[in-house]
Image 1: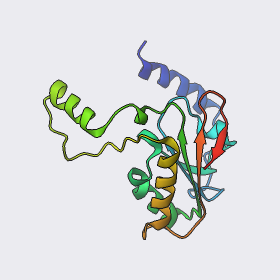
Image 2: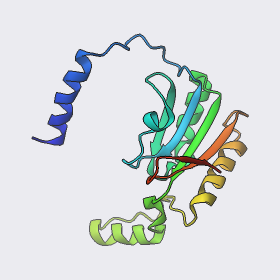
Image 3: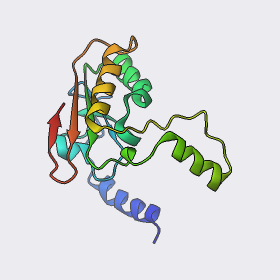
Length: 161
């Protein structure tokens, strides 16, 4: 059975018991969470969230610049008034450089990606500091609390930066 077929079967069970179809569109806790797409992170479980509580924006590395469009929409159209940024230990973004990935794409796919920044970083703590600053300084983002954390994939704990 393919993974997609497994998802379809699981969804049938989920939908049969689904009772949250009346949740309002804006998130109840008025918070946007920006975090990494890493499969070891379950933001809802790690932060005690339920459906309807928060917007969760995920991308490689949890990078703020890539999430900016969604943050603006979340604030301007759906009323969020706080941002939580979470990067994590053992992140794949620490394992490569733009030049290295561009070279790989050129070699393996015969594609030129010189115009793309993949946003890797060399220092985890600094990446959180930089992304919090980017959100705080952006003229597109409201002046709201922005808190940065590092999630430890070994312990499940968050450490405020």
